[in-house]
Amino acid sequence: MATLNETRKSIFPEGQDTWESITQRELPDMGSEEAVGMLQSWNLHVFMRPAAAKDSTRAGNPILPSDIIFVAPPQA
Image 1 (tube, helix red, strand yellow):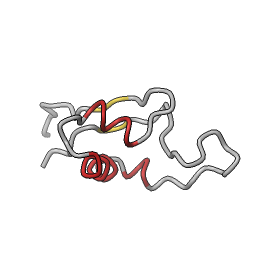
Image 2 (cartoon, one colour):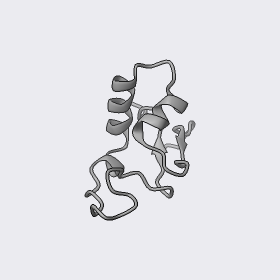
Image 3 (spheres, rainbow, N blue to C red):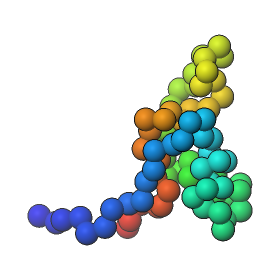
């Protein structure tokens, strides 16, 4: 049975983090639009979550403080 040798880098979001704020902090050397797209593709479990109700404090932002957000691509 294979064992894991490396851990994929991940974070817990801060307060009202958005895709943009996470990319600015975690992927500062990458263009904003490209970084957001990559981050979303690495985190489909968050990106594809059903939208919160319009009157919710999370409206417009699917990221929850309890989410695990991967900030590195999956290993091949």
